[in-house]
Image 1 (cartoon, rainbow, N blue to C red):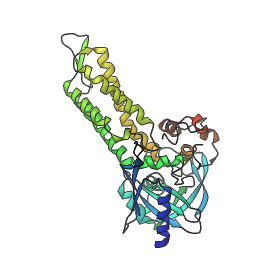
Image 2: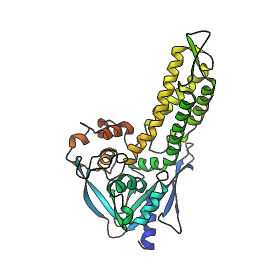
Image 3: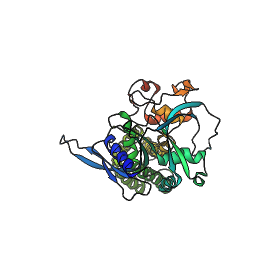
Image 4: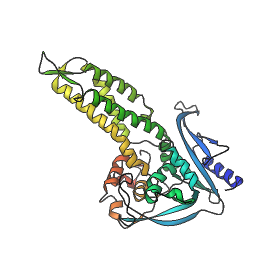
Length: 370
């Protein structure tokens, strides 16, 4: 890609992103061309915007003369982070993709970054004024490594970008980019939730219930555990991940946030001894909410990071009438895609996205509420 084509590609990306966002070009660049910072309009009708502290990087490849497209057959599969995929097993799905060849050294740089800071590939079709995208961190871990663990031995690799991954700030599909930019906040929260659960279990295997020696019908929570719960709840409810910003929001967050709010509201009454059944109900709620919070990270890894990839599961998740850009699935397993007999991961995806099969007929809880 020459300098002029590259500059035109970056200009096109800037035009397709929300106008409030700030794009900074990296010179010299070492495999990453731009750093993008997310801003959102202030709610005071002033027209001003403020940074959300959310960022991602991108490689931008400008193409003159049109991009190359082809039909790729992908198969349903289990979670590739736990099981190696079999190339001939699973139901076949035909999807249309854009192809682009990347130097292996560029891919190795992205792999070394890990997944916490997203790095996207933007392929800018300068003739058609369209930008296609894919998250390279997720592509490497979910596509490239499972299919070719020794990919580093090759000089180049063809990257497949779903044709429905079109960068368009006016379309509901932009919700994916908003959510992707929050990944650093999500990962920090997921780590915090795991830490808190381990600390609570290690300090109090019984979750802090202490019998009252004077009245066997009453109990209380160990003051050490009570103090720990209070601190954890205070920290958790301040997390920025609960804020609804932009068109993208991950619906499972609502259940966890509401659980933390219920715990925070009830906590003060358990400073003193209470009836045993009341204490046990509070502890059960604490256990359930803590478990749900920890499960967010697992759900994110298994389902959310699959979204917008050239896979069968992603094609099912992305097929929503709310967007102008849809997969147009041609599948041997139409019943599965239509929601009649979803696989384990597909069922988890619908729960994760807050969608039911009926939601595919309209906006429902899909694209905007991820």
